[in-house]
Length: 493
Image (cartoon, one colour):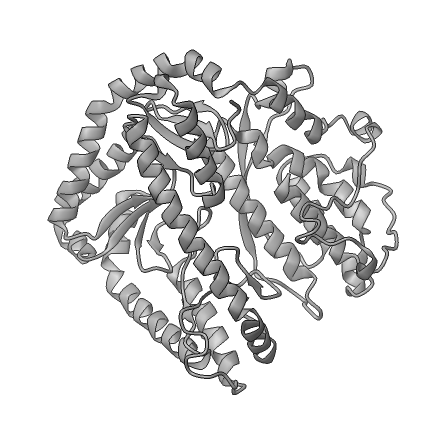
């Protein structure tokens, strides 16, 4: 329950004595209590059979965490409005175990947070998701113990849980215990061999039926890339082959209707995603829900986007020069994509803060290291993959101290990441050949240290029913619409 634990920890921090009075309208326990139904309704662990919805909820929860984190900044009067989209489970009262574990339905909810304190934020989230706020009536602000006395998540205690809820809470509110549901899910989860016996025929049938569509997708992609000298065509979401073909056919029709506008695409990479524009990496984003008129308008404005992209590259060079040669990078997100306008604004803000105070860093002291700039964080951190995650509003002297103190650790993590990446590539190739798979891939959320042991175990077991199939290592079992088999990385033998 990583995301809910993270949210609870953040909420509990807000109510410490160090926070402004306006943020103490709810105690830590009260705030956690209030948002519990929300976590239960949107938690990604309950969307195992729906990868797209799971992905959206994961990333929206991260953005919500960032918004709440900004509220605790000392002296903060307002934070940047944040648009969130969640898929909310439709929960029924009487269902059997299977329906208890996998939701029968869900609805999409989008809203923008523009609140200034924790209490208003909690109320806004609950109301926007049409969740009851009755349990908040009569809540009294309770004093919290100092932060120094509270356990904190870290290496020794990574999944600290602030409160162990009594079972009477669920009886009183009518909500189910998510821990109990996850236990039930583990109990009914089959072994990989049993699951393959039950679903291999279905996967083979769907895969064979998808062959013509796959060939058509390959042809369309190659044709469009050659016609408009595109670097590549990608998809942010895990859409099916038929959906992807329709998107390429739509772009092809537009090129016939308005060939002049489409010429501006030359040399770009196209990404089909949820919104139109240009992302922080300079790739052209085509919103799948937008009409041709909106795409055409984007193509016409591409020259101005290129000018903005040049400005971002210049800002990155200047920042790198000031910060000892560290490289500013963009990490492609699974959730809402950062537009080039927002990225340029963040870079500009950060660059101005650096110029206001001269730093004493050797020009090449941080060469070979990388960092990302985030607008929804309050403190710098070092990612497990070795790059720094820096708030755009970070105080320069504090930043210098942090970068210098963590530089050695960052280089070690990068070295470890590269070793894991090489090891994963080798074992994946070996697995692909030894098991005679048609394709073997993984979800972006599956880490190297999860994929490697998964492939090794597959090599040891050598399931004959997997021969000739397309397999994707994920967090759940599923047969996708085009016959791809999704198996959890920690599958049971």
